[in-house]
Length: 393
Image (cartoon, rainbow, N blue to C red; front, side, top):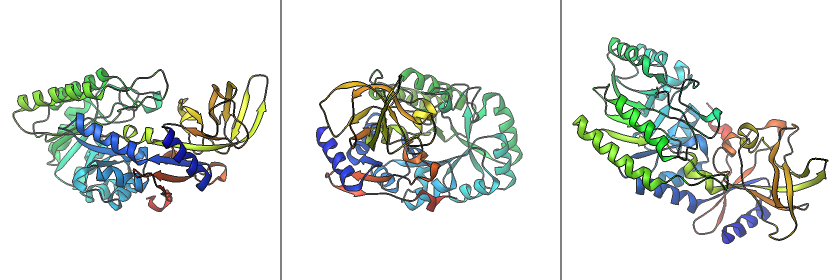
């Protein structure tokens, strides 16, 4: 950790702040954990978590596929060299043009609604289809990231499966795949198993089934009181469920999962510099040169991110509210956090920012996007900044 922090601080001095810094070795380790504990599952990285081309290249080299949700992401994944057989596209309220182009790419497309299924058949986009199902099970660290259950906009509900089958029959389609996604940053083994068991039970409804995608949601601890998901235990139970299902079905079915956050969150830090200090009756503020336009999670979800002072390890501690530079009262990165009281020009590292950090950044207040730097496995620093707008479709 000390070596990594020393390199991170060097990156801040060399490239300036605000700056996203990613550790290649952490990404590689996370990829290898999944492959070790889930040998019978193919993985498609949910690239919305972090779509930097250099990050995609690392993940691809580790033998992980890619999941996209827009034509822009699909184009970037193709440019990054992912094989179409290791890619998937998940639809959500997309146009006919988007659906047609996704189908033409040759990747597996998970249809999100009965309307999309009708459009697929009417436009004659292919005989085989995969359906995203909402089985009434949702989980996640915040209501905004729960993607299953009665309040979720995603997927075809179980009650609509008979109609989906009727539509498929009408257009001569074979339902060969099903997919679900219950939510984001789930840390409980039993939550995953409950959803998996339910999906496998539903799978028996489809006679032509060849592929089952359990979706994503594998989480990482952000707060000190959270525990790591027991991947070893989860992988063991998944192996039993998969083998029992294969035996009962009497045929081979392929399986996939769509991790996003798990692969990249802990690899990234957002480095910011303290530029102002002030106090009120209720807060001791440390103003920094970044804000929710560059890391929106604290403002949007109330998310906790550990914050470390890279410039000093000793000094007076106290309650500090770290405030951003966006012209909004809600631009708070940490409220009344017990930490070393920072000084002007101190560099702070906002941890676990590798997922849904830069990928959700904006130009709000007309501030430039932060640069991105990769610390390679060899300890070198590489500027990997890219322009997301080049891939917007």
